[in-house]
Image 1 (cartoon, helix red, strand yellow):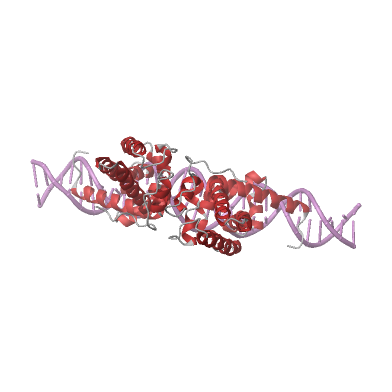
Image 2 (image 1 turned 90 degrees about the vertical axis):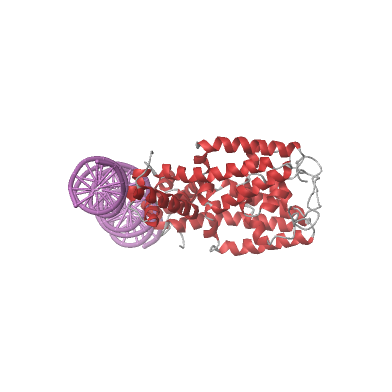
Amino acid sequence: MTQLRSDAQRNLDRLLGAACECFAERGLHASVDEIARRAGVGHGTVFRRFPTKDALLAAVLGRELDGLVAAAEDGLAEPDAGVGFERFFRAAAAAYGRNRALLEGIERCRTLPQARALKEAGERLVRRAQKAGALRRDLSAQEVFELVPAASRFPDVILDGLRPPGRSPRPGPVRSGHGS
Amino acid sequence: MTQLRSDAQRNLDRLLGAACECFAERGLHASVDEIARRAGVGHGTVFRRFPTKDALLAAVLGRELDGLVAAAEDGLAEPDAGVGFERFFRAAAAAYGRNRALLEGIERCRTLPQARALKEAGERLVRRAQKAGALRRDLSAQEVFELVPAASRFPDVILDGLRPPGRSPRPGPVRSGHGS
DNA sequence: CTCGAAACGGACTAGTCCGTCCGGTTTCGA
DNA sequence: TCGAAACCGGACGGACTAGTCCGTTTCGAG
């Protein structure tokens, strides 16, 4: 891993890009051959870089999780607990909507190193929002996150459902506050 | 198709039962071999009854849709529009949670004859509930039903999110009235 | 420019799955 | 009881996928 030969580095970049696209579009069933074709390399090259298809998938999902970890930290940096949670929740929902592999490979993610950081930050976000009264308390953090994939289609509906009963911060039809 | 021979009828019944179980458990990727094995027949027998795996899947999904149509009519029979909608919504969510194939094969369902009846009854349920003020109006019937699979995990949350803003018919934590 | 090592890519293996086919068996009705 | 029709199930073919191997090409240091 010291320094790849120039052509090898170029192919690796193309490969990761193509794999990300294919997995996002077709889900876990994207074939290695198709990824290799889209990357413009032979499929033997894929297996030299990644010993198995799963390893390639893990690399792609790892990148995606990195983005989510950043979004979670961004949410924690927000002073308002409710706003911080909502921002992360929307970002995560969008990521799931964008990437089929994230949805289908959710279990495989659990063994990834980034998963721990994401879980920890997510739990803090949830508990902080619950303590602030911006999030219903009858769901664990784990359960809240199980709703993320569902929220990829209609985040407003899910977020309304996640607010504590009796609290209705959306007086108008559905328009959310106009932002900062 | 007038009248099957006794053994053929018996095998067909077993076959549909096994297929339903396999598809529900493993989703669309349940193999024909496994279905045949579970039904106690050779897999050649499967293909004599159904020209293709998809045809078998369609038969199984058709049955499931029949159940949903019945649930929708049940909901329409309920005098209270909100209650009727909610009952159907919960039933549909439960069916999706129970049957992986319903979730994964949702697109294939659209060409099934039962789909039309279900769609029509569902739209009436939704519009009636919206008119009665029990359901938010910023979603089409189509969109409401896209939330059904999501609701298989936490129907209470989704239903809360589906209520019109400003209306909070659940004063307590989350307990829904257990019905009549 | 030379040359060794690293990287490449396609042929090949092994396994799975859908769908076909045919020889043997069971059922039905006369 | 018996013959024909219907049915059964496993062997088989073809397509596809993950992963291996090795002859060939490309890089880059000297």
